[in-house]
Length: 81
Image (cartoon, rainbow, N blue to C red; front, top):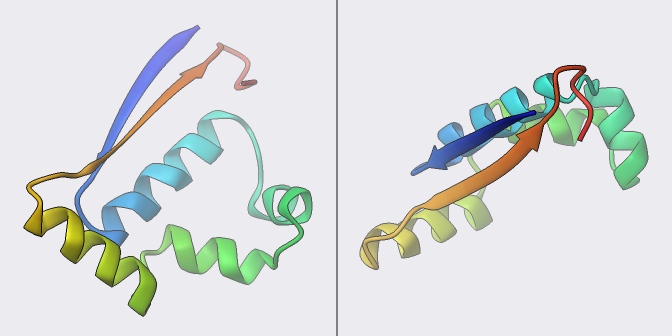
């Protein structure tokens, strides 16, 4: 098992981190979207860091407070969680 620490200071960085984690777990965008009951397009937009007001405001708030988002994940060698 490997531990991953992903840091995000922007919507784009968060999207990249989520895409890396999804890939490490061996899950496709379609599979993730289906599991969450959302569209694959929405997953794609999140992972590509497409700007939206909600994400932009969250990262503005975090910057103002001198903070960022960290994602801690544990992934085994076969990509399962």
